[in-house]
Image 1: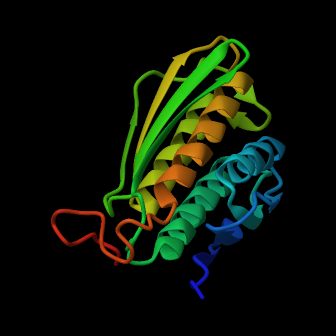
Image 2: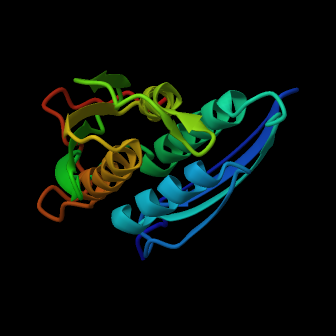
Length: 201
């Protein structure tokens, strides 16, 4: 029987308490409670379209603003993905997806390379999405990429509504990671790298 690819991370600071569990080979079930409705919404979309089972519980200093909670959830989610990927043996490794949401279109490409990197070619339109401003959404995605040690490249090709742009990005990220994290029966348990090495520690 193939082992479950599961990552569990807990983090507690003077600003937040966060617990994240991700199961890569799931069915898209999400139970997300961060106290930030917009963040709960897009992470639920991310899990549904990535077919990941995701549980997140976070409590933070929302009386100040949403920054610390959002950032720490991103850190923990990235670390949980890294743990779930393990040694990366047998995975497809790369994936991409383009997703429209009404007038907005996003394209996300990922490489589970063991190296965290983040590129976003154009900013979201300015504004607020619930408690999240456009730059905090960008910061969430950036923090996730670096902590997961995944290359994440995002093209927000166009769009005039921030909500639509953000939804399209999170759906596309889920779908791209679903592709990249799939097991590839053709390579079995070998590493998807000509180096024979992917940084996992």
